Length: 475
Image (tube, rainbow, N blue to C red; front, top):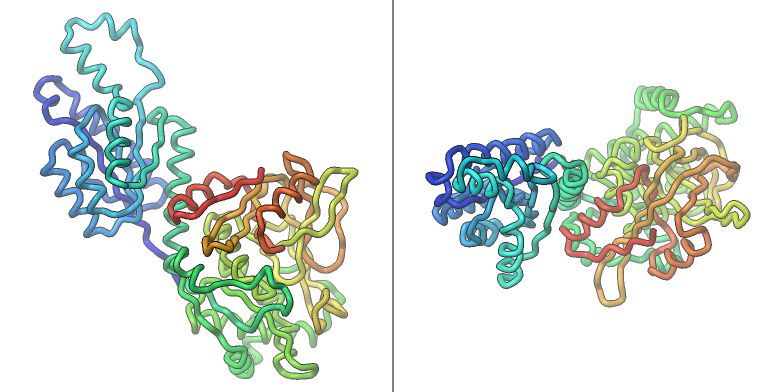
């Protein structure tokens, strides 16, 4: 399964003409760039640093360095005024997204101290250490004429706002690499009649770079047939650790779920899957039906292991869940349940596997006499998403062949929910329940979405820019 080592390119720009004229300026600017390098490394990334590029020759050397290292994204630090001729060769050859860091060392110059300097030379050198903004329009203008996509972060060198933006770009680049190096397993078929969930695999693969692996139910059956009693016992122990197992769960049902869960993990390992979409019914009394009616516990454990499993063969929502999980936000399979107009909130949830990493307390494992609108019976999970900020994400496929991301931020709140043996929670949105449902629906998603904890819409917007897809933000 994928575990890409993200490489970030970093280079600063300056003008070699300045160094002999203004004592200490070069070293001072290199110090600022070193600070940026260390902050980027602090996020756990591998930083390929080409140093301070101040000539065309150094620009060409930096371009070769980044191309050979195969960096995912370039951060261009504007240390002072620099010629755009030292920038263009680098980004043209690297052929990766570039983020221009227009970061001033302080929020403002100390005007009194500046004007008290002894000479015009000292004053000019001090000004040059603060004139990062001077090059921003030149770089932007050249990029625009050259047809190069770029992004700009403007702020203070150690400013919280600027670094929130930078971290969003780093996280987005990492998630883009995760998706590109991942494999999604498709097992079974669509829930018949849900035309909104039908997906174009080629289109999704072209946007995300993900490999699609078709997995047969018979492969899962063969692995399940080979599960040993020791495997079942080990999985039962895992159930006891991961779930609050209801006393109503019979030993036979727990063994049945443990056998299927063990086989699921073997299937994922065999095909090196990073996430999956599944749905199957099977004829009444068949072995395939026996498998699919005992699959929820195992897929919940897969979610907890950062291998999202989307039910009802909702391929687009499997991508939404993988994106949310890759951002560290969880990502539980959900749909609109009911509106509470008195409290101005919306309940969302879904039957099937949940994501234990975002649960309020321990996930319950409970028996159901009949699945919700689906054939069969067996064990299911019951949980709520922990209270606090949440983000909703849906992957959309449009009539014109494009892919869009639909995102909303809200709050998971305490209060009464439906105790029906699945995941459901109460959510409040800044635009109110009625407008949220209207605006979300009008964007044209399928009726499923992924819910994760924290407000990460900004990061999803950055991911959309890196992928070249539109992001629609409802609230």
